[in-house]
Amino acid sequence: MGYKVVVAGATGNVGREMLNILAEREFPVDEIAALASRKSIGTEVSFGDKTLKTKDLDTFDFTGWDIALFAVGSDATKIYAPKAAAAGCVVIDNSSLYRYDPQVPLVVPEVNAEAVDGYKAKNIIANPNCSTAQMVVALKPLHDRATIKRVVVATYQSVSGAGKEGIDELWDQTKGMYVPGQEVAPKKFSKQIAFNVIPHIDVFLDDGSTKEEWKMVAETKKILDPKIKVTATCVRVPVFVGHSEAINIEFEEPLDWQEAQDILREAPGVMLVDKREPGGYVTPVECVGDYATFVSRVRQDSTIENGISLWCVSDNLRKGAALNAVQIAEVLGNRCLKKG
View 1 (tube, rainbow, N blue to C red):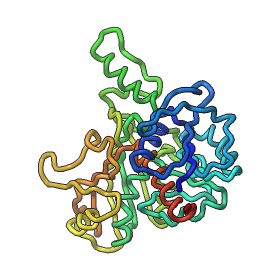
View 2 (view 1 turned 180 degrees about the vertical axis):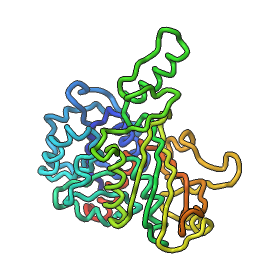
View 3 (view 1 turned 90 degrees about the vertical axis):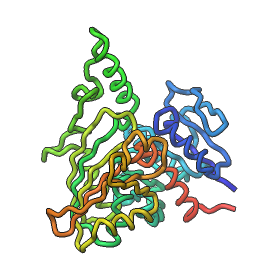
């Protein structure tokens, strides 16, 4: 016996990926509804070998539906998620709206699956920021072994994290570089993204950090351990899909790089690819379409007493968004909404 599942925002990059992953992982679906804004009603989307026509999110009745995966942004989520939750449908939300609400679990299943049990407070579960999700998957098994004190992370985030407009802008600017008179001015991003990097994601805060950097700090503490100190520098790079992170970790206890490799090799959700030779690491291009969080370049940091540095890469549309949401739905079904 399966579930009645809703995907809200089904025509966007993440919504389409949610539908793909639900089908790929053979999530037990008895009935599925693809929802979109009024301007996209009737748009066709794929669900396995089926084609679905989108329905109007504004008028949809969530009564009798079990799980709703939301990928519609914070403004729309603020309107429709409470309606779905009030109708008895558990919302798994990909926006940032509920991530910092103490009554809403923020979940990465490989890290804190048990937190799903707290969904009943509001009938809502939050999906973390894409850059946080992959990082905590890599950090969790190391934290369990040696207790993390501090994390310093620099991200290299693809333009798909900014939605279709980000992808289009990189594509158009890249083409425009080769055609005189057809240069494309920045619109989605603050500066040219083609052949460039931009150390600015989301809005600036009073302390000089950006909100994306703040998210990584706050979410890591909520998901993994409030005692961990985190500092982040988040950078947009001219890559279509796949976020990369250079992570430096300081531990309470000694941990050598060989043991760190052994731990990561067995860790859930992690794929260790770490050969100390040219090409013996994973890049964003190679992670696209994959479920795993890839870890490479594991090495000792001799500048601090107990330090490890590593490189972490993942498909941000999958583990950073759609895959994690579906994994939450799987945990929810197994722990809380068992049928049959």
